[in-house]
Length: 121
Image 1 (cartoon, rainbow, N blue to C red):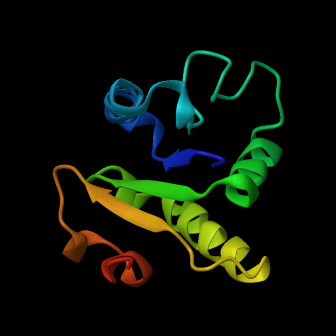
Image 2: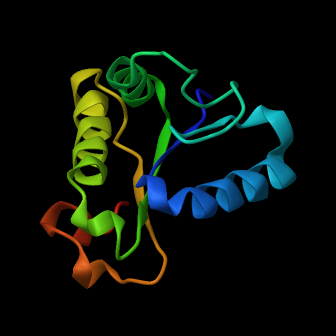
């Protein structure tokens, strides 16, 4: 498994941190959790690294993308782009299906733009 990519807006870093802590408590190092604001160098963007290339690599390599949907993130274009990019990469590589899961916090799916309102199967 390539792991889990968490798409979030920077202001939701604490939620991403809590989610990573939960996944690590359940699965240990067997399920890596990557997200851009992760502070340690395993799973986050290193200082000076090309952030756009890092996100592209995450999109291409991830098995599962969790899209954190909060009142702040639904206003940002990146969470929509990243969810679509993960789905598109799965289709382009003939993967079984895209594994994009919206996770709401302080909002519901009705606040989201159309692509994320449809629950992933």
